[in-house]
Length: 257
Length: 207
Image (tube, rainbow over all chains, first blue to last red; front, side, top):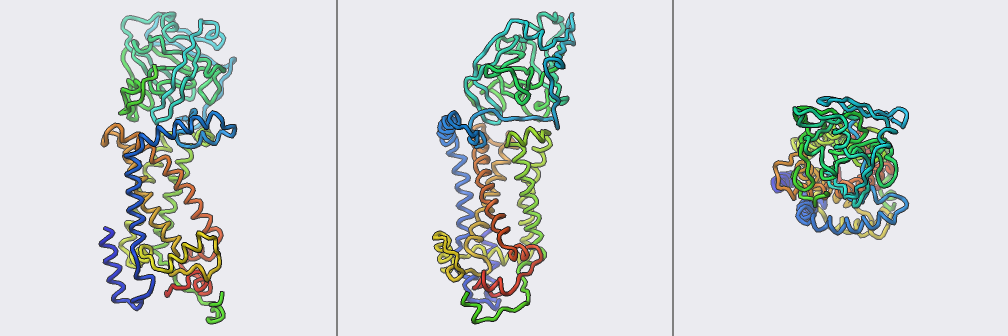
């Protein structure tokens, strides 16, 4: 198309009054810069795996020694990113927070934050992998095993899956019953050895260690046992329901659990 | 500056851009603005926290990005627009002089010869056109994940992120330079510039 364009312009030159004027002749540097930029872009895609590995190592190290937090804004600069699908998220504290367990269970239950804290806590240290690419190494999560809450509620024989709802009013997630009973799936109260803050989904979030982080629903407020898997918020929008790290969503990241 | 002694400044305006050209610039700028603002809301944690509505912001970003080349393609129907593309493409010896002066931070008009577009504007136009298409291609690879092999998608994300940062910086330079030159802005807003400005900033331009 570029060739064609220039021919058009040259024709203009020959019948124009500006024939021979400096702005109508000269080297087609613009086209070279344009094509060069396209070429560099293609080269960037090809070389990205190597470049990314190098940059992650460099920026990850820099982020640890960066008091300003500016490295966190660079692509793959390390650390967590805040994603919310709702327009605003209400804040809940120890007085206002409730977690309801219902659906195909014998004993529907409502837990307060204090109730959850009183149960035995499990601490896991794993990498966190987001489906958009960022990864945070060795992140401690602490909370109650989901299997313990399910057993206490008494799951009925017809149950096959678990659906999670959130007090942001929008987000939903789901797991099969087998996935939900894994020992590395927690109802998390603490992250990085601190109580979960609001921006990280506090006071209580789900933590599904072996799966991409969108499965670990923030601001968890409801657990409903169901007879089939109902796709969650992002899954309705094209993400995989079985979101094993490294084996789903067309990605080949190193497994996290 | 010596030019003014030879040719006394007149008050008459001269035509710099046609209506079509200004429409192309304005529409492209608006679409690019939507891309940049939505990108910031997806990317900067504080803004993401403030705005939320991630699915909506993603949709806006995707469609604005897809539409971004459309105004330029539509502009190709205009003879004046195609002629300006030709001017942006061709570099003469005076452009080398201009670039050398820019590198040495030599701001005297005598050392910055330019026709209708100076060498900086030419480089910017060619680069931003290429960069926009790279963003479009990598963006489509991230959007339609089933079209390309697995590894490509992560690579496309990497290029898209870093090029976005680069475009943000270059675009800030573009806007900054426009803010510093009210007459250049008037040219893009009304289509006309003063003869005095044209003779000072674009000595070789023969409108």
